[in-house]
Length: 100
Image (cartoon, rainbow, N blue to C red; front, side):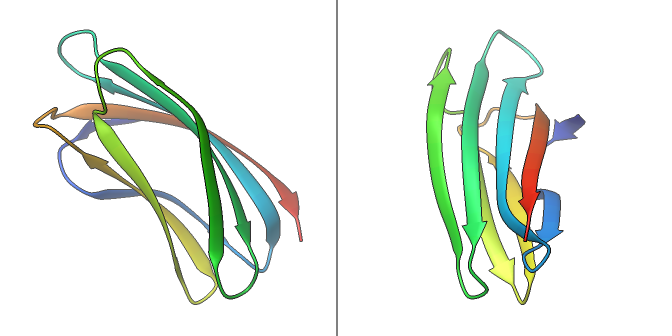
């Protein structure tokens, strides 16, 4: 759990050569009001690209954060960016993966 996110924040990373596929369950909430957002990501790095499928997205009152995936060298990083003036936000995530 990461609380008090007000700007772009890297919340997790992994080495692409160690993991064949990684799945994330992500939950975001505003610290005031009842706004919640949840989504799932599957990431399949192939050594060159970080292929991503996002699915199962559900929210109670619009998007309150955007999750992006990037790869630099062999490191895959996940970043959360609050949107729509919904700060601060709290992010919780669960990661599972299959070794390369």
